[in-house]
Length: 538
Image (tube, rainbow, N blue to C red; front, side, top):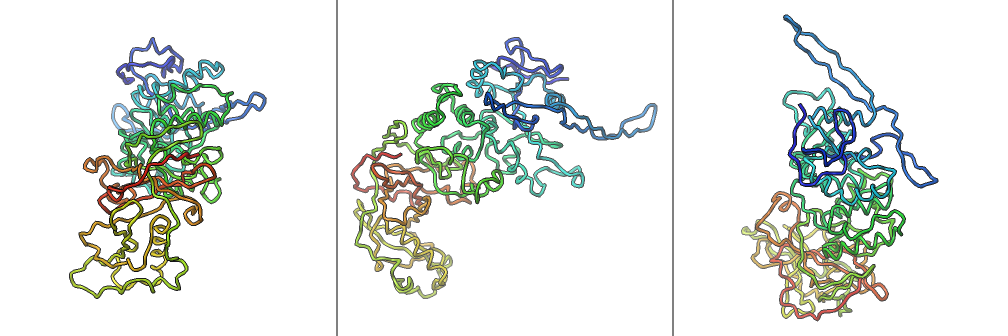
């Protein structure tokens, strides 16, 4: 019997009745429905009508359904073996069979429920995608790349034990498209359907750590952009309209028009996004993207280019970076405005002024400036760390900063490179004196900070003016309420505080990444006396 679902508050204009695959008015349906999420190229051959610039689908009815063999009772006694059977159907026939398997009576499916030849109806429906998916009982996500091999079947087998299972999922078409990301984040829950396996999305999240299936996914701006900026769409307009549906308040302020200037549409959307949440600035250099681009976007040169980079967008959108994956870092900063391409911020910051600094890179060898390594001590179990005492601009006292950790003996030559790089990064923003270097026990109770400049394209290495915006701290607002303790404890990027870094570019500044300070009390810049300035970032 079909599953009778409770009727939601919102009903789509049309639904597909599975029994006969006919359209019915949503207002005439008195029970709940499900939605479908899939990549269009799964549904047939997608062609482009160059005269009108529209895509259309040709379905040759080559979608395969396999009915597995089984043994049944044979009256009056005995058993009979029924062999497996293969059936080829249209995409609609495939949907019908899947829904019958899961006892689904009504489904919303875009190619049938939206009149593709009526632009006004199409645009109106697209504006309400968040309602359509958000009010559905669940979304069926079709990921045909997923499946088990017959040699692996057993009564105790679990799908997540398959070798390479997560990689096949990440390589799927469903994981490459912007609309499928939006549909996943708009849905209350997801049923992932492979070619011979299926699973609730939240079970995949718990086993494979695919966060977009988490039922409590935090749709913060930075976190959504982390997943969005590696996705593609057939049309550039759909890239924005799909992304905007994740933020319904922004979708209300946009015009559904495929004839408007795409560049202006891009700027409008990202401006509204920045107005909503300055978290758009919380990005740094590539980490996870290197893997994602390799798996999902084989055409990108050396896996260094995301789909976003083809658009002429301001630096503060993070088009050349990678946004915060977990969304743990938040800020309460509000003193900013957005006007088109310009993000105007008023806050304090540390500038890389021209200090009377000893040129670390010109020293004959780094070992010549290191203090003698301490004698071995039986009470020191965790090794020694090398710190440098500095007094940054605006600070009334010196503070220790870690430049080399976990040393059990005099550093080897290969370790000197890392120490030099840390000293050179710090030298851009504060005076570095070789006499201020000191070895301390790694388990010392002294509060020591560790700086990491996750900036892009090596921009700290030239003479351009860079500023750490100390007035915009991004940190976990409540460390005591840890949603994902394993993720937080295992990944140092999830602790500490992050500050945006900008660089002078003519009359404006460019956002180039973050300064990450961790392993301290998260109050490094407290009690600094720095004057506020206004920075225009483009």
